[in-house]
Length: 172
Ligand code: FES
Ligand code: FES
Image (tube, rainbow, N blue to C red):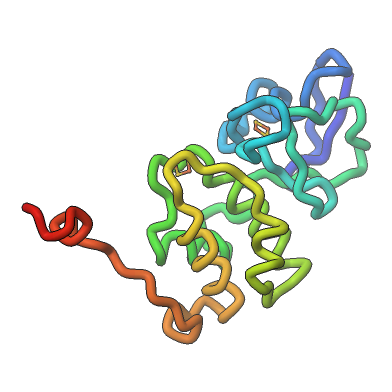
């Protein structure tokens, strides 16, 4: 019997010790907000926190996670999407397909806890997650909104929705 502290609750389950944490979260514990992308620690879709450290759960054997360590998934950030990072993501319409976004949010949350007012270089260093929809600019903007206390205007951003006609050089 293995045991983990996930989102503030102790959970027990039967599992092979070399099973990646990601599969325990998704299959044993039903926490499907954390996604499988590459399986080789490259894309960040599977990012969760272990004692506050952003961790790619697809390559982390569950047996290496101490039972006393605090594992937090996207479901544990808030019950209702009210975490400041989630609110900034919603305010700026960051997600497109959404598949990478729980990993993005977990990485951003860890960054902002460590550096509440990150520079672009800090963001570049911390946000190595891959997004096939290309949401990188909005991810960066949303992090700056959180750093500005959730105030989009104070963050001094110039994020606008580009009309399709403009994006096509004026063609209808
Ligand atoms: S699924 Fe873990 S980093 Fe891609
Ligand atoms: S929003 Fe689609 S992969 Fe990132």
